[in-house]
Amino acid sequence: MKKYSGNKVSTAIFISGRGTNLKSLISFSHKKISPIKIDLVFSNKRKASGLKFAKEKKIKILLLNEKFFYNSERKLVKILNEKNIELICLAGFMKILSSSFIKRFKGRIINIHPSLLPKYKGLNTHKRVLEKKENYTGCSVHFVNSKLDSGKIILQKKVKILKKDNEKKLAKRVLSLEHKLYPQAIMKIFS
Image 1 (cartoon, rainbow, N blue to C red):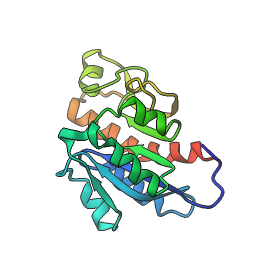
Image 2 (cartoon, rainbow, N blue to C red):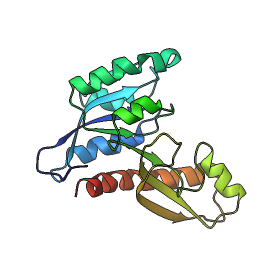
Image 3 (cartoon, rainbow, N blue to C red):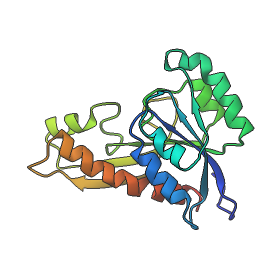
Image 4 (cartoon, rainbow, N blue to C red):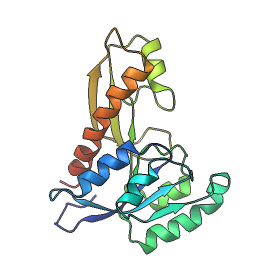
């Protein structure tokens, strides 16, 4: 990515669910030191509860039919280009992007994942971490490439697993780390 020059970078956030990382990124984008401005929130799910954060802040929302998502990617690319989107942040986006989409936006798509990559790629990370009796887990922000959760890692943050942890408790603690890590990773890529 280019160095931050004072002009905020036009950013799209992709979500599928609660949108807590979206809320955190919106907050971050309003800070003077933030290199991003959020111009678009995209969701593949009409009922994604996180869309309310975009509505509250009057950020443009784009929805595409989940059933025909890959057929709609062309429309998505057109809109991203029209809005001059320079950075795409995946924040709980539960759809795998096509390799042609990733190639088109190479080096400009980042994702947050709830594990210390390269361990525990994919789904059910907290369950798998607990089953393997790991001492630590955490979260990672990485560039997106065509292999699932395999792009270059930008930043990671770890947390000790406690004896009292279950999936729900661990997920909550890791999520609060994510809210801090995503803005830090964005600052790092533009420094």
